[in-house]
Image (tube, rainbow, N blue to C red):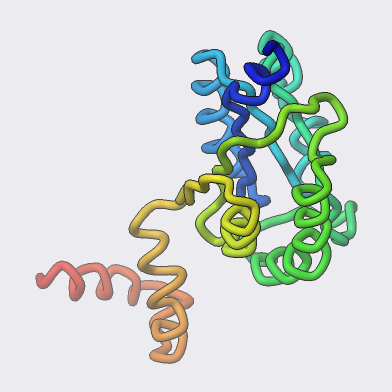
Length: 187
């Protein structure tokens, strides 16, 4: 009976986009879940996890939660090069080529965590990780897509940036920036 109750306890897997902003948002969510007594496994790619551990107090911050564990999945990126927005597509390609098959193997084999044998009962993945959604559905695990960027960034970056670049509006230069702002405000 005890073992059956253990498997029914919630265990949330959080898998954010491997950039500082999305990881920070997801860590805040993880902390709220931990405060509620929910077991959380936070999965990072190796490239973002190393500087996170080296340059923040995240380990001491989460050490007070016995129901929290960090795990990593390889991403194939060079560890000397910092991850920034200008490397977005390189990071996404690496996640797709390297992390995706390893993540699938971890989930299917049940070897997600070296520290816990609890099965994942809910997955919260970044909305851009459609492969995580596919794996969760395949394994009959409820999944929540967590969007960590602002609507403005989403609209600009994903839907309109190529058009703005084609039109020559981006990158902004000199006084033209002021004129573009006035034009867009209808002034």
